[in-house]
Length: 233
Image 1 (tube, helix red, strand yellow):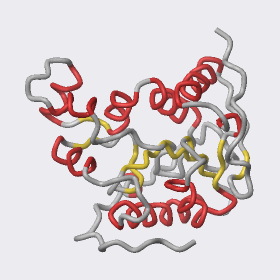
Image 2 (cartoon, helix red, strand yellow; image 1 turned 90 degrees about the vertical axis):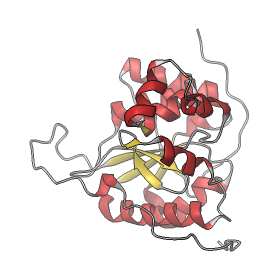
Image 3 (cartoon, helix red, strand yellow; image 1 turned 180 degrees about the vertical axis):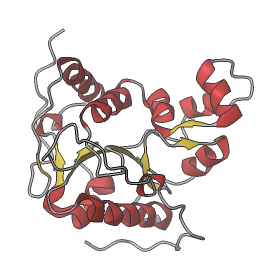
Image 4 (tube, helix red, strand yellow; image 1 turned 60 degrees about the vertical axis):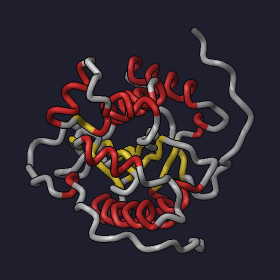
């Protein structure tokens, strides 16, 4: 596909921490299974709830910890997004199988590419992330995502899979990832037609039941569909 070019990003992007973990060869709890890395769409880093974390008068535990020594990307996005990201995070932690030395749960972070959900960031870094739109026309967003998707593709090998837990109805994540990962990029078909809250609830139910959803290749998939029945209470 053709990107609309905007001014290039200034400076170098930080190298993703999830690629620099030392490789430790231990007994594989699931021998013979290829890596399966979950890619979590981002919460809005410049939104009102993220602003609460940056408020120096905030007294709740996560804000105090974050302002003093930083906090994990996953925890910050969960706070900002609520049920949807909580479901994605719990699901990816439960079922992710990272490549040797890598993470099975990566968040798409504007301007930073793919980040391990456990990686800590500072208030200054969150402010910088909030300034980058989730827009492929913006080089700061696009170039970091392309860089890390290419690195992930090399780490997955031929048998590994990446599962996108996010919207496939638009191309803001799916198109660039599909260009690089090809048939290794999967998604849960049960996401089609569901809203964010329904997706989050579905993922949390799967975690409690210890059952993964079925996946399908994103290439050639139907990205829009009717709303499925509501989840039973």
